[in-house]
Every structure is written in structure tokens, then in C-alpha cells.
Length: 612
Image (tube, rainbow, N blue to C red; front, side, top):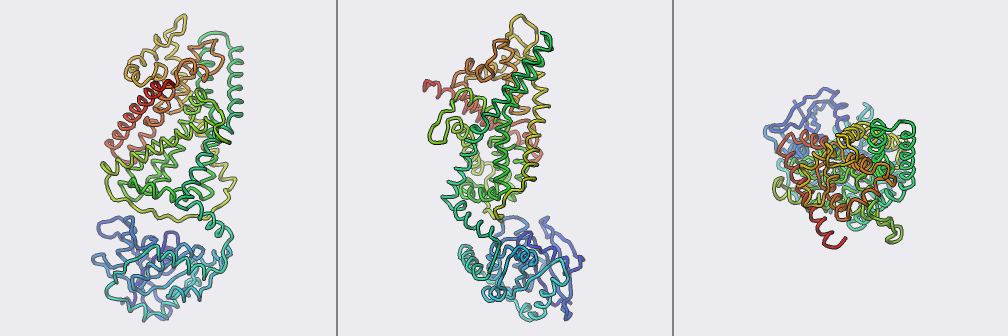
């Protein structure tokens, strides 16, 4: 007969399951609670004096506020609110000893339930190895429950817990029949937990203290927003300022390559294909590689250092106002690199409606594929004059485009949460890592994988598109290049009237269609089209060609289009797979096209009316 029923409670990754397996010998019964698919396990073990103990391994929780299905199951199991299941007699709260300061508030919350508790400081060996020193006696006195240190992976490391169970058997069996309904003041408990931690944590790694001091600034309601703004602003300034010499080098190299090939290959279609199709098309995209590298350097450094999780917390309050939480910030931030991993990262959001909302607005984040388009237009139509101090105009415009996408995503999310994805918002709970110096090997491997992905697209999708576009623009053959009489021109002429009201010309319309394969292809198309149209006279590059062919309102309208227009076909396919719904995919495509058209038109006519 079971003499005692225990529940293992604690945060994810605290070692609960390892402790459970060690106590039960791995002989566990696995089951799903009625109505949910959350897996729970129960098993049995005997203490040294022969007490038969049933133990439950519950899903990880940070407190009594359940924000997901698995957390709700854990809280209901502790409270005895699951039909057909008896509540545990006592709780073993498992805490990673190295992060006691972080999880003490969970222990205090469990105390409010009125159940007997044993606090198990797990992985004590790893904590001591890292230099953590704790006053166990003082902790036991401050918290008011038995405290033991455990090493869940070893039999000897579990003996202290077994001994306490034997010593406390009478107390552990004397739980109240009804759980008191105490109102939990989270902020008060957190304040109490910090005070206790300051008394019982005798020594900890220097980086833990440094982390707390930095967090006083970066997690401050005002200071945190200012810090995030400054980091992003500096990042976009660097994308332009630092990359210019390298871009010039690539541009000169591409021009020299084109001239060299033209000198070797006889005049004719094959020379035109290589010089005007391949080199002009692919080269017009590869020239933006320095900006891609700089942007990814910043993103990887921020992620590896531990700041990215802080950015999510800083944005939590702002996102709560539109019905989301800070957890959505990570997928949205990932979308700055590419919308595909951003959409897939939304899987971490427990609430289905929040997940859908995040997926729907992820394409509004400016992915790296748009950088070539932005840099081309900004470089052609805006000088890099100094605005104030180190701030330059081109970086300021770039920052404004990113900011427009972010603000638009927030507004669209607000509308969706009031209509199609209406539902309660979910608070953010996330464990913040300590700040770290990024590992060079991991950093450079991550950077290389992203650079290689960009170059691979340049060598496959962009290369193929450049060749096809060259053929469509070149044929049928004619004495003088005339875009409108070419195959591409005739195709573009069909949809040109649709885009004429928002200031788009034929060349822009032609670039939009293959641009759906990959955003940067639009630059390749423009490079091919203007190289062919300019012929031997096109010696000043694509930027100069655009300055001669476009007005500033036209250029601004084109930029606005790329802020909002749906991303590549691969992104749409990913959205279809992640939502398992054509309805949501088509809805996203429709609203993005509508926004792109409307904002581009407004931008064009306002700029035109202002005399720009």
C-alpha cells in the first residue's frame, strides 16, 4: 500500500526527470491526462526504512500561473483538480542550485498552497564546480522548509533526499484536506525571494553579478527601450558606413570581370548573355554581400551574448498592448534574417491565436533579401551626408524602412487580435541566460552558413533568373534595344496599367514578377534590363541608370512596395505548412499585397505633391 504520494515540481531543465528516473529506476508508467496530450509519468520507490512512495514527474512550471496546456496540467495535478486523480501529499520542489536566485520565487509560491514541501537543490556538484557557495542552514531557516542538496545522476547524490523523506514522513503525510485559496502577490514574492537570495548566496560567479548590474539598465522600462533603439540604430548605420569600401571593391571587380570577358569573347549573343545577363545580373546582387555580412554579425553577436532574450522582455509590454507577448519578439526578430525560420520559430508560442498572429505579421519584418533593394535605391537617390555627429542620411533612411515594417507589424497584430485572432494575451515567462562572450568558432560557423546561403541563392535562383530575363528582354532580336517590344516587355505591358497609378514604370513591373522567387532577384532583373537598354553607354552602373530613369517619388514608391509586399514563394509555402490552412495563407497574401499597393500609392502621390 502506498504510504506517501509525492510530486516533483520545478522549472524546465532543473533535473526533475533525471531525479525521477534515479528514484524509480526508470520503471515509470506513462499516461496522458483526460482531454490533453501532455505526457505525465508516475512511479514507485522505497525509502531506506521501507516507506512506499508514489512519485509523479510533472511538466516544468515557473509558478502557479499556468500559461500553457502542460503548465495547466501541472498546476491542476498539484491542486488535486484532476478528476480521478488524488492530489500529492507533499511536494519536492527541484531547483538548479546554480540558479537558486532565479527560482526562489517558485518555492515561495508553492508554500502558499499549504502543502508540506522539501526543497531539493539539484546539480549541486556543477554549481560548486562553477564557484557557487550557498548557506544551506540559512536557506532552510529563511524558507521554512527542509532543504537538501542532490546529485540526481548518482545514487549517493539522492540519499539525502531519501533520508529527509524518512525523517519527515509524519509531517509529509499531514497535508490539509483542502488547499487554501491564498492570493499570490507575485511582485511581493519576487522581492522576498531576492532578499533571501542575498542572505544565502555566499559566493557566485562574477558573470552572474555583472549580468544583474547590466540588466538594471537593459531591462529598465525606459532604459531598456533606449538601449534597444540605440543598438538597432547603430546597426543600420554600420550596414552602410562600414560596407562602402568593400562594396566598391566588389563593384570594380565585377566591372573588370565584365570588361575582361567582353575582350575575350567575340561580339554576339553569347557575349551579351555572359556580360549583360550573368555578370550584370548576379553581380548587381553580390555587391551587397558586405551589408549582409555586417547585419548577420550584429544579429549573431546579440544572440550569442544573451541580449536577444532581454530584447524580448523589453518588448513584452509594448507587444502586450497589441495582444501578443514578448515571446513573439524572437520569431519576429528571426524574420529580419529570413521570414522562413521566423515563421517556423513561432512554434514556441503556446497560444494558438498568438502563434497565428505572429506568423501573419512575420513577413513585415525586413528580411535580408530586401537589403539589396533598399541599399540600391537609397544609394542612388540619397546622399550619404552627415546629419548629426556620426549619423548619416543613408543609414537614417534604412533605419526608417526597418522601423516602418516594425510599426506596421504592431498595427496589423493589433487589428488581428481584435478581429480574426481575438483572444486573451499570454504573459511572457522566460529564463534569462547570463551574458557571455560569443565563442569564435560558433560565431564564424553561424556567419558562414548565412553567407553561404546568400551566395547559393546568387549562384542558383538569381543566376537562373538573370539568364531567363536576359533571354526575355533580348528576344525577339532587333537592331536597337527596345524593352517594350521584347517578350518581357510585352508580358509587363499587360500588368503595367495596374501599377501605373502608384508611379511604377515598365522596368519596375517586370522586376516584381521574378522578385517573388527571391526578393533580391528584383535587383538582378533591373541590372539586366538597364544593362541591355544602356548597351555600351551604360558605363556608370545601375545606380546612375536609375537616377536617370526614375524620379524620387517613383523610387520612394518602390521602396514602400518592398516594405509590405508578400515575400518569396518559399515563405508562402512555409506559412501554408505551419498553419495547415490555405485560408490563412491567402489572407496573408491578400492583405500584404493590399497594403503594399495602398502605401506605395500614398507615398508616390504625397512625394509628388510635395515637389520631390
